[in-house]
Structure formats: C-alpha cells, structure tokens
Image (cartoon, rainbow, N blue to C red; front, side, top):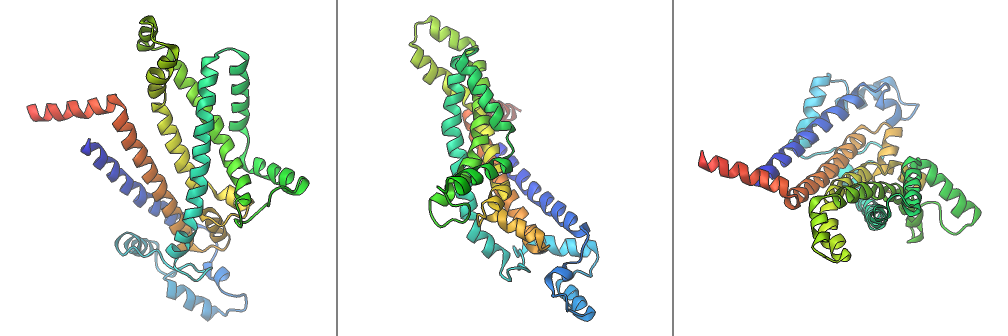
Length: 318
C-alpha cells in the first residue's frame, strides 16, 4: 500500500513541475510587453528597458525558465504581484479559504442531493420517476454555468431583489454562487449514481441476499449502497479538484474575491508572477485532492488492496 502512495506522490510532483513549465512557456510566448501594462503611458524608453532589466525580461527563454523553476521549487519564492505590489502567496493565502469553502459547499450539496436522487431513479427504473430525474439531470449537465449565473442574477437580484449580486458581506452573498456551482454537481452525481446502482443491483451477491430472504432495506443499505458508492468517490474527487480550479466563472460573475477572480484580474493586467503562481497553486490543490481520493479509493476497493497484497507476497517468496 505504501508503494502505491509513494507512486502517487511522485506523480503529484511531476504534475506540478509540468504545470510550472507549461504555464511559464505559454505566458512567455503570449504577445505583448508587460512593461506597457505595468508602467504608465508616459514612461520613457529608458524607463521601460530599466523595468525589463530589473525583472529579467530581457534574458533568454532558457535563462528565465531556469530562474523561475529554481525560485519556485528550490527557494519557494513565488514573486511579487506587479498589480497589487504584494507577495503573490500573501494575496493567494488571503483568498484561498473563500475559494476552498465555496468549492467544498458546492461539492457537499451536490453529493448530498445528487446521490439520493440517483438511487431513487435507479430503484424506479423505467418509470416516470426515473425519466423525470434523468431529464432534469441532462438539463443540469448541459446548462452553461455562466448562463445559469446570469439568469439567477437577473431573477433574484434585478427582478425580485431578494439577494445581492456581488461581494461576500453576508451569508446572502453566498447563495447564488453556491446554487450555480451546485446544479451541475447534483446532475452529474445523480446520473453516475443511477448507473452505478443499476450495475450493482444486477450483481450475483445482491440476488443471493434477496434469495436468502434478507429484508430489502438491508439489501439496499448494507449490500448495494457501499459497493455502488465506490465509483462515486472518484467522481466527487474530480469535481472537487475541478471546482477549485474552475471558480473563475463564478467569481467573475458574482465579483467573489477568491483565487479565480485574482487570476482573471492578473490575466487582464498580464501580471506574470500572479498568473504563474495562481495556476500552480490551483494545480497543487487539485493534485492533492486527487491524491487523497486515490488513497481512499485504494483503501476501500478490495481489488486494489488485493493487487498490492499479492505483489508484496510474490516479492517475499522471490
């Protein structure tokens, strides 16, 4: 089992290095001069050149890449934001709790609501309940997040004036972002849980339990549900990782001061240290979430545990 964990940690480090390389390369070749954005329009040519020399922007690609990787992974120096004039990590750490909490709430609500709906649809397969659930789930999956956010703002903020449209001043400010982020999660979890439940219901051990006269409630909650939930763990983990990295739309529509809005503002001002660090931090949290999910999956899935137990016994015999 430890071999599996170490292997996943090694892949996490490779993912972070690869992400740093890709985002640095992309931003290096993006057209435009950061000096034109960071300095006022009245800045002279000499001032622009001094700015570029100070930040090392006149160095070659390989020199800048090596310096960036060295500072990031050896010195753990993520630079200073050109726009906010503060250390990037300081700004990110002040915003990350909001983004993390928003993602956590949407994922928990998506699982708490979506999983029971999927089970209910599976237990009423091919009936009107099943068809209704799947149609609603299809609509939820297909609906663009930014469109839903705008429709909610128009309805609840402009027309009804029940909720604020932006900021985080109170609990009411969180309602619309949470609803927008939860809809797709509910739909995906319901669809996946329905498929997983139907697959588990057809298993031999479920038929055996029913043939032995086990009460239907025990068949569902003790035999079927634990096994049907195994595939859902990966789905929820992927949703959580995507939610942390994909809050740009929610935070930009609702002016929610999280990492996503910080990244968007940094892109608009071509704040290279902020862009690189934001992407790397989001990749780190996503990779850590997926690592935790993989470890949980390996602990509860008997097939993975048996695989590593068998490999360990074979190595000892050799």
